[in-house]
Amino acid sequence: MKRLLHFLRTVLGLIFLLASFDKLLHPQDFAYIVANYRILPDLLVNPVALFLPWLEFVCGLCLVFNVFSRGATFIITTLMSIFLAALGFNYIRGLDVACGCFTTDPSAQADTAWTLIRDGVIALTSLLVFWLLVLEQRKSR
Amino acid sequence: MRKPKVWRYFILEAVALLLLSALLGLGVNHFRADGLRLDGKSTQQKSEPATSPQITFVTPAEAMQLASDTEALFVDVRDSLEYADGHISGAVHLPYSAVRDNPDPLRIILYCSGPECTMAENYAHHLLDDGIQILVMPQGISGWFAAGGLVEAGK
Image (cartoon, rainbow over all chains, first blue to last red; front, side, top):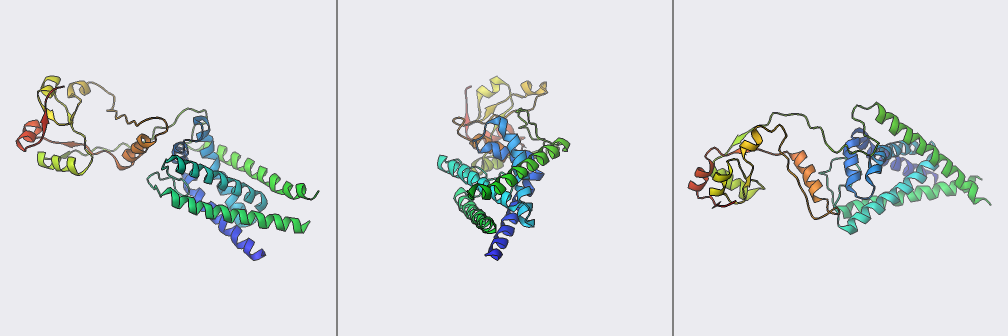
């Protein structure tokens, strides 16, 4: 169980580190993508575009090095639910927005259904890590 | 009463990470040359590097082929009378006399049905990424007509 947790935590951390790099380097491009989701008011687009990649980066680092991993998993599970909701919302609305998940290139318009499945798997993984950490925490008390 | 204590670690750590990320984001943005504005003002113009545009010359036949194979927009640069006399079907009238002394760049304004439609913005990104190619047809409307191209008259 411990091994599984360790493995999943590291993989999840690496995924989030990988996802954050391009967004950290190109905040303006990421802001376009955030705006394109048409969910946030204009005032919040830039702050969110600045904050999210750093949050992903910090949480990814924490998961890989097992520092504050409880908080990081908590955040990542919450983030994944929000991402899934936003993507799903736009999918139902029929807006084919660039996902902005791993790249800020708006022309990388992967089809949303596939993105939903991929993000769903990541969300489930983070939920599993979260649950394992809660169990571990309970046991240690 | 064990539950709240288990959750406390998760929430405290999460708050610490949120604060750290916010500080990092704001700090790095402050020192970046191309930082984002946080006052709600739009920074929606992309600074594209100034490149010297290449003009490509085409014959009427090539222009016809391009217009049928790809998306192309014909611009008639002559004065109103000549335009009204006859122009390429679907050509837009933007006379050179109006552009010559005007320092403003030519603006292409894209739109679709309403705020819920993002096609125009996606189109703009597409244009910015793939660029706009400007072609010149030296033979003009007479060459076009001689090559059997469609012409329409009127305003």
